[in-house]
Length: 409
Image (tube, rainbow, N blue to C red):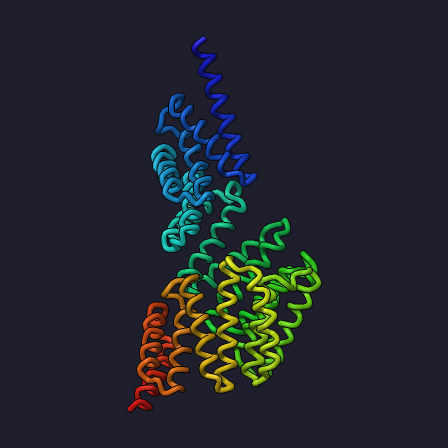
């Protein structure tokens, strides 16, 4: 009869909906979209297009589209789910908060961090009303809020949010070892951006401690954090920083070798950092050896963005060695090759492009090619001004240009 057919249609639409959720959990998002679209068409007939049943499907559909990076479709579905849920359930409902949270994930994937931040604030407001139902989603939203602030370069605010998240984790009975360690890592990065070195080191120590307890002291994640500690130690510039950072990098290499990652791109990154220290100390042979290792690894992964950028950074370091030895033509070749890689891979406005241009300008100045020197350093300065309003690098660039003009007469 008519009622029975209706019930059968409802059951089938529910099956497609649940199948879509399962596919999302299994990260098979193409099949998730197919199942959810079938469910949506059935539910529109059974319940009407403005029903909460359709909103539930639209919400999951938006999530699946977002994972496929089909952002226009993701936004369309999530905004529709949000519209229906706000009208039918109100903006204090947990389902409304879920849609806002899913919308924030899409904005983050699109690198629209201001919009993500606004969505996360709204999701957190509602999740706070339902601590039992929201569960770990509230924690996720707070951490993602900190991530968005970090990307927006509001480092003090991101530090405050990450500290709040650490406190929240402490109230959970179950273990969140890796999540807590990752949070300490993010906190360390944010502190380092503020030049709050002691706080950064303290956070990284906590991160290493938790990873070591949870995964073992020789796990790759421990090595990755040690790599950042080594960079931070050297950039801090205290007495003995070269030796301390070199110890960190050697420990990273030991961990990577133990895990058979000695030919991985990250191992090449470590070699470049070690070469930087050797170059600064005037140990050019050691620097060249480290850079040869790095270049071999990067060239083995050509086509991958990280490998290309790594090759560019390696060429920069090779150029520095040539420059330090007054081999200006070779230095110019290395810096120009690095510039081409950065422009092709990262775009014309990236800070690595600015650094390469500046290096080229300085070499031209040493060769008394003043017009070319000023041109390169001025281009470098324009890029730096896009990234910073008031920065030591900008002051250094202006000083370099002034020196070149003074020497030019």
